[in-house]
Length: 146
Image 1 (spheres, rainbow, N blue to C red):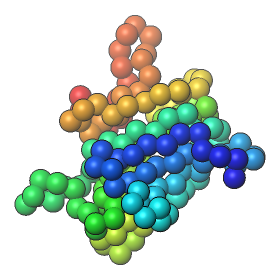
Image 2 (image 1 turned 90 degrees about the vertical axis):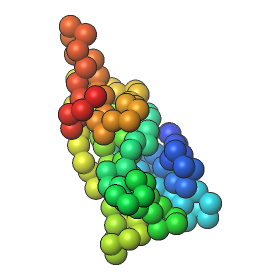
Image 3 (image 1 turned 135 degrees about the horizontal axis):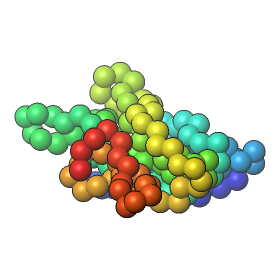
Image 4 (image 1 turned 45 degrees about the horizontal axis):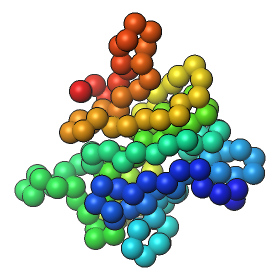
């Protein structure tokens, strides 16, 4: 591996996402349990360097408690955005391997841009990710909302 280009802790501090570059220039996304350092899942994420990561709201919530379902080590349903020099911003969903614990990353959405994407953030209290501004001042959003 050629090192990490970006890291981000989840809002509750339970997860650490790392953008890892390899010598070929391809980028992997890895999610770790922050307290133990255990690798929970990873995926080939982009064709070029990842510049930024941002954790967003969980996709699934426990309706009785109003909080994301968790196995004590990872939040299943958590969303993670990665932005890259390949001209994309991608939203990933932390998936379950056995119905409860974290097992993988599923690609939820891809936003395309004609050039590098250096930064991306989820809107507070929204399920959509805001993409690059369009000409004329509008904003592009994935998944509606906000």
